[in-house]
Amino acid sequence: MTVKRVRFIQELLRFVGLEGRVHLEWISSAEAGKFVQVVTEFTETIRRLGPNPIQRTVRPFKASGPRRLGTSSAPSEAETDAESSEEPAAASHL
Amino acid sequence: MTETQGVNAMECKLVPSICSYCGTGCGVLFEVIDGKLQGTMPMKSHPVNEGKLCIKGWHLHEHINSFMRLKSPLIKNNGRFEKATWDEAIQTTAQRLSSVVERHGPDSVGVLVSAKITNEENYLAQKFARACIGTNNVDHCARL
Amino acid sequence: MIQQIKSWLEDATVDIFIGYRDVDGHAVPHGYTADRLEELGNWTVGTHRYPLETFALHLARIHPEATIGLLGRDCNQRALNVLSVWNQLHADRIRVLSLSCCPSALKTRADCSYLVPRKSGSFKHQVGVDAEMEAAELEALPSGERWARWAYEFQKCIKCYGCRDICPVCFCAECSLESDELVGTGKLPPEVPIFHLVRATHMAGRCVDCGLCEEACPADIPLRLLYRKVNAIVEDLFGYQTGSDTAQPPLSVLGDRVELEPLPMEKTG
Image (tube, rainbow over all chains, first blue to last red; front, side):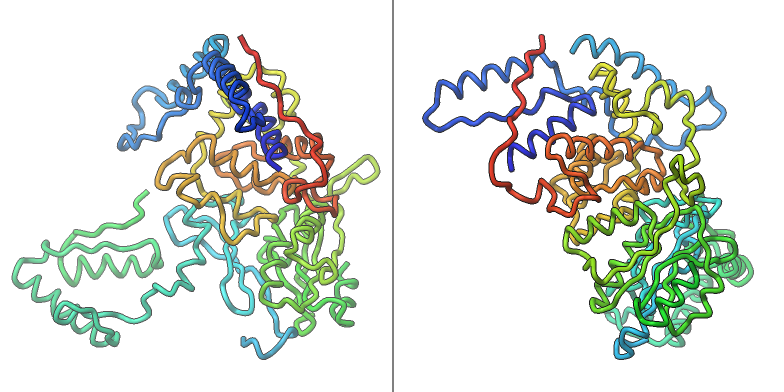
């Protein structure tokens, strides 16, 4: 059951672009060496993947008071635009 | 309709209505089974919301059957709420309001009306505020 | 069709038949019964779809002994299959009258709201995920961009729970999306991407690809595309076709032996 769920989650995360961040390995309590090796490798993998992209792309919703109509066209759109043009760069950084 | 009438008496229908939470006026369908409200669906063919609703609209049916719903007025006596009849409640409200207006002037009263009552009732409420009490302090919970 | 329903109701093949009636030009779901046959005069079929099986489910919970007739499009039929696999409805207490839908080369006429292609604006094309996209098209993009596009979509969520509430196969009494530990309360947008991915995960082995969630989404999030991928994963990994399979879904049974291997660690550099 675990492997079924983990494989499903791995595929789903790949689809939304967050792959490589879930790993499953069977290690017995007697296999200390394997444990150390897997954890070290996975830590390295995660480090190479870079910081969590969720925190970078997702901003908390801020109730910034009433938005004035008429002042320079839709500030929210401009913000999101800047965000998206920043993304490909972030992707190569990954 | 009661349960004793058996299978033949069962009823399942959807009743079109308008969401009462705000001034947008989204079309909703109330799911009525055996005369009891069971759920809410957005009305797909309604020109205003085109089959979409917000979280409040989706849960319109919940307050109707809620056990927390007040079904009679309560009057606070000696720090405790007590059940009262509508006549008593209206009498008390009228007395207290007129004594407040007498002592502090009409602008010490504000009337806050609601989206959950009809347009006509809202009209009456502002009429009450302006004509009976004599204040322009009228506002609405769903000024969009 | 009306004759068929009439005879079903008269000879008590069904106790109630759930179809649509015309209310001032709107097709509104309605349960027809034998003691109110005259209502069939208002019978109508529009292009708008409602989860009729949800009403049948609510009816069956109150009247477990009743036989319920249902006007069924292909998606309704698949949802009924899933509901019976999950022991929510008894297949022998349900009769379905099929309705022409999901057109093909042989059958061009269909009554379905999904046939009108939706058009997205250029901004959504640029930064978001277009509902008309294929999963493969999206997978061809680099993963960083894919995430940015999905994040753009998920952030629009206003947490109306419409996708869950309209879903014909969401029958749980208790929903994980309402658990404080998984999805925090009082924040908008709901925790990205937890809210949508938790729902997507629970759709594994359940989603019947009816598209009602996407239709009901006020934020225009391409949910159908996401759940289509969920279905594709379930089919690829477990060979399970949701809606047409009568076997228990792969994530609710343990199985006899382990056939899957976890993915190896990715050596990205």
